[in-house]
Image 1 (cartoon, one colour):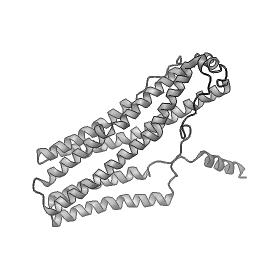
Image 2 (cartoon, rainbow, N blue to C red; image 1 turned 90 degrees about the vertical axis):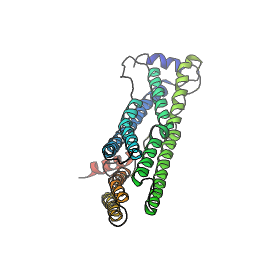
Image 3 (cartoon, rainbow, N blue to C red; image 1 turned 120 degrees about the vertical axis):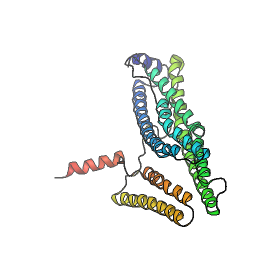
Image 4 (cartoon, helix red, strand yellow; image 1 turned 30 degrees about the vertical axis):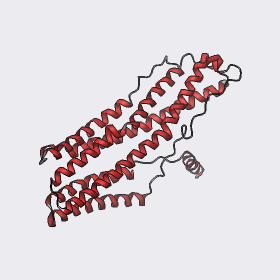
Length: 299
């Protein structure tokens, strides 16, 4: 990293940070940035896979839709599923690494990156959640027709309310992540940028990063029993929804029952992603060190 010595001298003016403090800030900030990029990369992978699944699930509906209402719903869902990976990957795009870049250049890149991520979460309702929900409403209304039966009306009402609750829950998670993690990080980088650009006039220590910036709090690893329980729950929920749809189609209304059966794979996939049984959760550093020490002490 070029010009690092010049930055060190500027930051040591009067009561400014020491050289050791500056090196610590540079190292910790780069490590934390790598952790943040990895977290967002994994998020984008999961969301991209979900978007592809949504596209593959709803796209065939364009060819079997009975009316323009349901066709419009299938079209909206297909477009959202197809564009979701594009939106996420464009927001995550960063300039290529430059060996001649200064630490200030690095901070500028982080500020731009965080602003795009924050804007992505701030507008998630308009480019993702609301279109998804509108598509679900159109498909539901198109499947039941203009004069639904009583059981159809009851099912559709309960189904749309459940979808609305789920959409609000996803919105809450995105809002919480933006306000709890990304916005404090952006403020931290902006303060750091001001500190660096202040040069000889900057006499106070640089700001400390917000809590949780330099450390990752991994989810507790799933036990073998938990994995079995989740696996059974996923299969059971999928079978129950499919069975319920078959029973309704056989005894009450074929259209409503067929629609319920078509949602069974979606229920299974949602539980699959919520459970996280496909991935191996990292253990906490102190637990890894403890285990490593026990291994070393074994005869």
